[in-house]
Image (cartoon, rainbow, N blue to C red; front, side, top):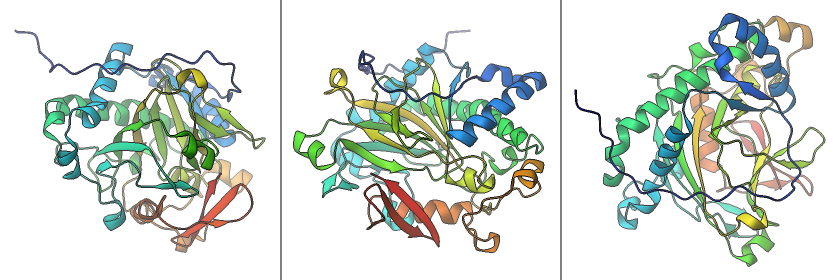
Length: 363
């Protein structure tokens, strides 16, 4: 049988890792290979529960892809930005304001960061089935590989994390998995995202913030760690700390929807993107993401039957009868992020009311 050939792809040269001494966030590293056995899941579940309850963040290693496979996907992730002409890109622009969907390109300078400064972030988003969506010509040879990458994220990373989170609430293992069906109505994305350098004037006007502190919309976000140090989380003591790059590692965080489903036990992490350290400036920051959402028809109410929640109590963002569905929450937040006015609560917090719920941004 002849060997399977894969299409060539231009190589993306990532920045060298920073050598600067930074204030790093400290949260657990999870060996996901242990989640394959009941004994391993029993060992990991309390660690994941405590980390998600304290930070909303985890590092994950041994997720099943090699460094070479990771590098190949990074090269593919650069194709929509370097191999697709600008005029063709415009044909695939996301309908963010119109229908609250990120499918396709989010162009640079679409969001307002602060003091009138627009973002320098470009991303290309693909709904998880991949082949149900039209794509630029240059990306089409890589669609089978992207589909395999999506399936790996969904079944080999997202689902094991969801099982551990369910065990942390003393729920049946499949409680959260059953809400994240691959073929159901919804908008789980794989995202290729590229940050570009900004002018000194823009850096001054935004106090070096490239994306304001925020929480994610969905349940679980998976970021494939990349070398440019720019991601920061707000630690429990209120200080911003950098997230360290782990080669071939993952950064996993909880979003609003998981916080609502878990009755507040798991925290939607406040995180932002900040200007990289001096030895990495001038480099682009290219990332791979998988954003997990429940099926669109899932109502975002707590799992009140959880023995843990019955012991510690439930924190609700709204009354259960007023809770949005995943689809309603996803569309509402997507339509307004970076595009509508926020109200300053103090020198740090800005607020919006979306679907009756308060959404905060942190500057």
